[in-house]
Length: 264
Image 1 (tube, rainbow, N blue to C red):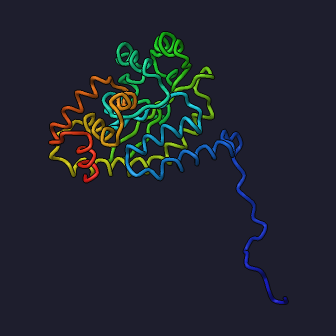
Image 2: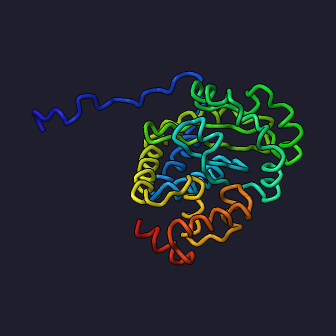
Image 3: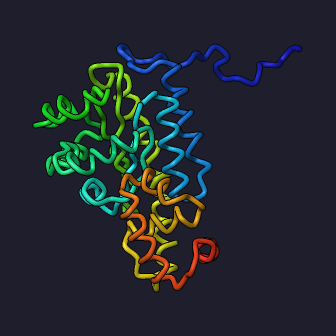
């Protein structure tokens, strides 16, 4: 029709070209979205961590994943609560008994490295050669990565991931983890804050962070062995924590504990 000029100021607009040397492909971005879609529907911190473990295994192919959390990065690394997936009970028992105290990722230098870089490889941590050669490689692990997810005032997540088929964590994976941590930060902060509020609502229960973790999983119906494997602690330690939890919460059974936790 005469006088119609169209609705678009620039009908020939084209997408912005990617920068030269862009390390991430469309497939990589789908992996990023896949992880975010997996965790953004989590109802609480426990489910968020579980979903993150499974998503990193599924979308990245990491053979083992651990997700730790704490008020500070140093606390998360050294004393933080968390869950793991992909490791055998035998491997975790050996780690706890002989290697945990010499794990390079628990080195006092690591918090500064992670805060500066966001993502690091185990192979980049000073003094890691013996740990990799004598413990990880005989167990089929060639390298690990650690990722900081900063939840602001609510706390932090420290995520450890292991690879088995490449000499080190691939450069593309490192680049994608840098992008992932930025997108995970607000989601993690929300879950950490919600978990803190939940624990504050039951402040009369004088539970340590680890006892709270054991209580939460027991209330969800996990067995002592399942809890031990999830939290990478011994079954006897689970029993000790659970006895303390039942006494502190005045519960006589796991069923009663589940009811009390649901109410909280």
